[in-house]
Image 1 (cartoon, one colour):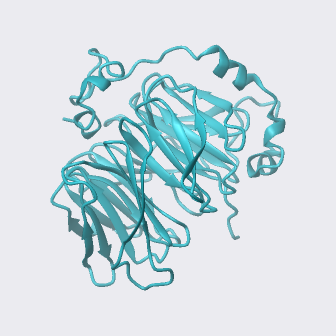
Image 2 (cartoon, helix red, strand yellow):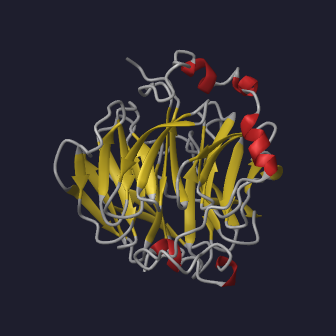
Length: 378
């Protein structure tokens, strides 16, 4: 069975899963109409974006052509269970390019640091697509996992890629070579993998509740901890300065640890806080680039923003009609993009808590999103 379904087997999932259109054992999700509040928010003027990197970097977009060629300064993509990857104009909410992903649903997306490529992780392949082209075919496929690929990401310079899968492995792929170069056995279905800012360690979480640190220099597991025995770790996030690690699990709890800044290896996790963020599954947790906020996405249809100074609830983002699976901050941490099984993605103003854009186009659950609006050194 698909991992996304197997981790959602309880009564609370009944409202979110349909009995028809099952795909690989996973019930596909319905697409309810947008609420009046959300529809009104979608129609608001984009003045709120005027100070954001989105607006500054998109002033060159043509207003005459409804489907302009991509502008590499802001890359926003979503994907899910309708077997498509969609690229969006972030400020206008227009889909300008759709890729077909015939093999399976798409579980995760990630954009390379130079914004040239997009990795789409499915079951069991990872496809790499060019961003700034109309070519609908992947430039390469990374085959080696034997189950759903649940995590994918790139090293800072874009030289290699890492992935995790419910086949129980974490793999490293040299983008210039074929196949994977390293494999680490987790002994449990891997649900999440993140790269430490030091670029020499991976931190993974799995279905059995384990968190492991993989030292790429020593080529071994250097640390292992279990915040709640038997409770699946759904998501892990690490602060951009390497000072904090957050792990979210299926019981709605976030565990926060302090790490030693500047250390060559992550050998010691100092418990800092335990946060009961939701009363149901947390599907994604993410620390903001400025290390001020923690976003938690949940099966309760909300996203919550927590202030790391005291871990107090700052905003609850409401509007999605079904589970919220994924999120990503803009580089200035002013905006958050979310993906939901209501088939939409949304752009939220973190300061006001308003959904200022709704990206509608998917026909089934949208379970992943990727955004890169950072400056790229030429």
